[in-house]
Image 1 (cartoon, protein in one colour):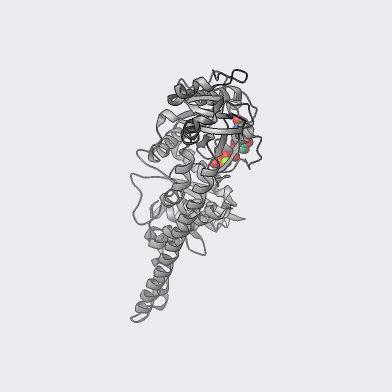
Image 2: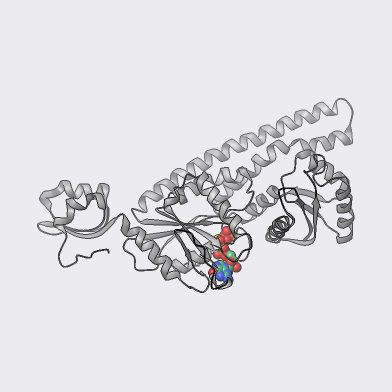
Length: 416
Ligand SMILES: Nc1nc2c(ncn2[C@@H]2O[C@H](COP(=O)(O)OP(=O)(O)OP(=O)(O)O)[C@@H](O)[C@H]2O)c(=O)[nH]1
Ligand SMILES: [Mg+2]
């Protein structure tokens, strides 16, 4: 276990309470990464100090804290420039590492990634993050060796390093494209199920809800970024249509943009779902900020808000009068199961809006109609009889008139 010190700033547009909440979150990230939080430091400033972020005085205080707690790592809640990292490491001294929030999140992602896709995405993000910071090791060397000549060697070595990293980045990008193609093929074979994506801030309860809806056994735990791989499974309820639930990686304030970029295609695919459930931890003091961050990410990914329903989760932990007064929202507890039925009804309603499940009996002679069903509806079952073909299919509303006449009386099931 590493002893870690967390550092944040109070700025004119970032009041103390919010800064403390943010530092609280940074503490959770540190715990998730396997570190032990031994001290928290908040500095009040008008702006970050370009040389040391917290200012020289605070940096010296950090040095004392590090010695007192035998700290081996200091994490800053904001991105640091390579120069700031260098200055701080010098001021704090010893073998203490100085990293920023992005590096910490990248580290968590790297240790969590399981599938080949997630691993590739994380490595790509890490290298992109590293590339502009590569100078550092070599300036150290320059300082030690000094003098003309060594500098030239240093630069050559640096250029070499950069080239190696760039080559690797290119290779990872190729690899990701290949994986995406495979996934697209798999998606096609998944057929025309109604898809529901669970998205939202990390720790909001997406995986718990996923398990509740699917009887799945996805890892859900009180840690940030428990889930890194989009996962899908059929809903375990009686539904108008075949329904697949998709669990996704969580969002966080200031997610490193390299990570956003590498996870973009996975997220884009997930949020291409027919319905997006935005899961919000209603019991979290910062739930309004977390919701806004989620909404921002969804907007960036081009999700039309008409496809989004807000799910306020952890209702068991909020006042019973908790009322969101927002359109398109449900209040549930994934943990206790409270009001989950309401949520399932919301999904059912959405499924019914677009069409109906029909059981049809179509004469062989109408081959063109059958072909049209396969093209534009979703065929679930098909059996060939002597003169007809029996088909169960989800038929979108705009095709309904074509098929009404073929609905079998016995199995006619209005979806409303
Ligand atoms: N009290 C309460 N706790 C819940 C509820 N839903 C989830 N939790 C807890 O919240 C924590 C996070 O749940 P997860 O389902 O892992 O959250 P997630 O959104 O998948 O998080 P990431 O995968 O890390 O993004 C776990 O400790 C859950 O037990 C709920 O309705 N009520
Ligand atoms: Mg999860």
